[in-house]
Length: 390
Ligand SMILES: Cc1cc2nc3c(=O)[nH]c(=O)nc-3n(C[C@H](O)[C@H](O)[C@H](O)COP(=O)(O)OP(=O)(O)OC[C@H]3O[C@@H](n4cnc5c(N)ncnc54)[C@H](O)[C@@H]3O)c2cc1C
Image (cartoon, rainbow, N blue to C red; front, top):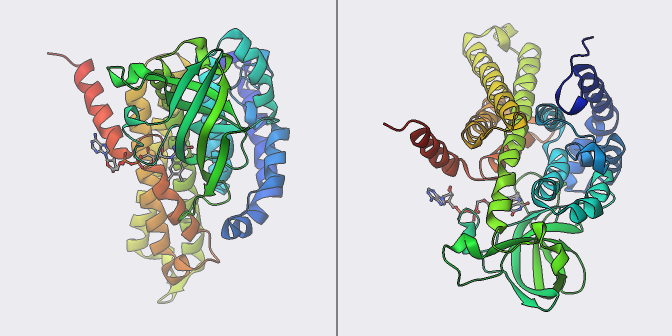
């Protein structure tokens, strides 16, 4: 096996060993139990312990702060591999790492030293709290306000749809520190908010899919937060800090899309060789073969776009267009493949005894989270014009 150096001192052999360990964990501790937990919408406590032991909560946290320091290319392969078995599991560490990445990129040295080692072990877990009942895409319209009071801020407002909202304890919280400021984004700030008096979970949200992971509404009622929790120590940069993490977030979601699209395709390939109609396996009917070919092509194209975006991210290049394209294509591929796989399965595709119905319920979320696919198209077009002036 080659030991070609990769990013951050991680070699190709290191990457192979990491993926092998994850595959063993998935086969032994996830695959046999995922369907029952998913149908019961039960938080996978033991699996989270397994992911902690594998270091997944510190996958992209630099080694000097106790993480694995993996490049995004390796991380994307991990997300794909986990999502192929159960997408919700990847959400548990993805959301946590998007929060961590705000600290990695924008935190002060003290904040990095205080928080990152605890994030890396999974001892403290959390996520990203941006969306509010009145806005998701238009984040400049948020109404949660943090008002300065000596060396503290007092926070009031509501966040909704927050992944890890119940089982997580710390969240990168987007607020308005100056609600009147124009342009609106200049009045925003990003804090690391830890649950305590004045910060509570008001309810768990029920969903079509993406079960097992908790999505919750968080309420801040005169919640006092110390000014040393302001990420980067400077007001007015909140939206910039939060959205900067979304490039990585979009690569994450694209990798999830590849995983779901691939799982749907593999189930279709397997089932079509088992099921017979008119005296032969359905895989011998051209109508089915065309579906399999389209699904497989979707997976490969999605995987290539995702890798290209991850490589650009690792090189430190601006890659909002690449990440947007990967996110758009891979998540639409997941949606298409889950539907096509269901059709290949006939009536059984609609049954809870086969995993295809889960892919079909999980896939639509990918087109919404980390910026809807409609928004991705707008961002791609803007970049296209900006990069090609006449
Ligand atoms: C299961 C789940 C988990 C989530 N996890 C998190 C989380 O951990 N943290 C978090 O902060 N949020 C989370 N979200 C929220 C998610 O990020 C938002 O739902 C998403 O950003 C869309 O926002 P919205 O729902 O307010 O839709 P809206 O912004 O109201 O959009 C509605 C529709 O209008 C379209 N639209 C909006 N603006 C434009 C425009 N300018 N041009 C064209 N079309 C437009 C959108 O594409 C969409 O089709 C989660 C959501 C779900 C369902």
